[in-house]
Length: 292
Image (cartoon, rainbow, N blue to C red; front, side, top):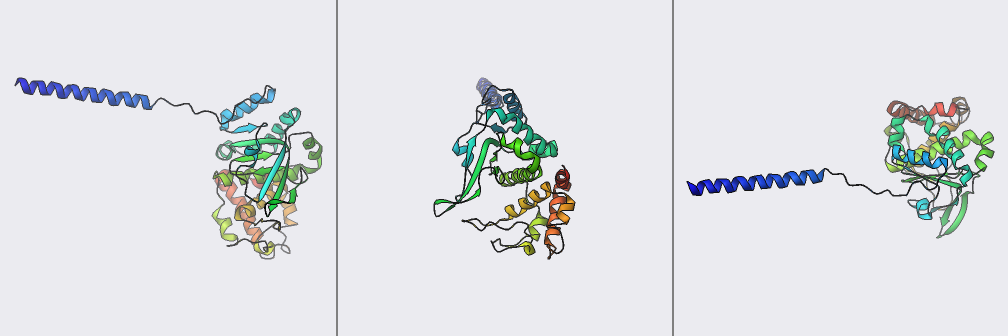
């Protein structure tokens, strides 16, 4: 009896010790570990730095006006290269307000939470080049003469952080708005935030090449330069660009006109883009294009 009693005591003690150990391990496991920031914010002490910090806290996204060449060029293809100039501190607030009013304000909060780029870089300008045979080839976006926006899987770059933006907006507001929404969507699709709708894919060519035309449902002529090849993503964001920078009446008189859209594919793809954003995300892309 004494031996059995002692064994029971020992077994009970070991069980309690094991349970205590497991309990302690469970308690330790629920203590959150602080994840270090990728970038140090704020980058300065101006009034707009507070809004940048608040933006990061809300979306876990970084707005950077001081960044490295690596930050700018990471994830670009081996044939497309970009360079930029540093943002003008006196115009950063203006550029931030422009980004908010001409892009973010058009989307519901649920959509922004799903699609916000991890990094938003502010530069004074952007130049884009195609590389041909390892050397710089044709300039496709010299400074701010074309778009001023670039997108990769992790980054949206806005190359208008200087006085030039205020100077060109009176005549190029809708044009630049289209380029900005195009780049925003390109970044989000590349990062997996949203997907190209299946209906659009079904209407698109099985294989893309530089010989495709409007008859194939393309609304932009592929840039036959360097190693560039059109892709499904390029095709899709071309539609986003056109819709967000033109009224429906303007589109009806151009790319949706039967004499231009001879195969009817452009009209069908336009509807696929409009319906996708409206039904899935509550976003009216055409309303953006109707905006002054």
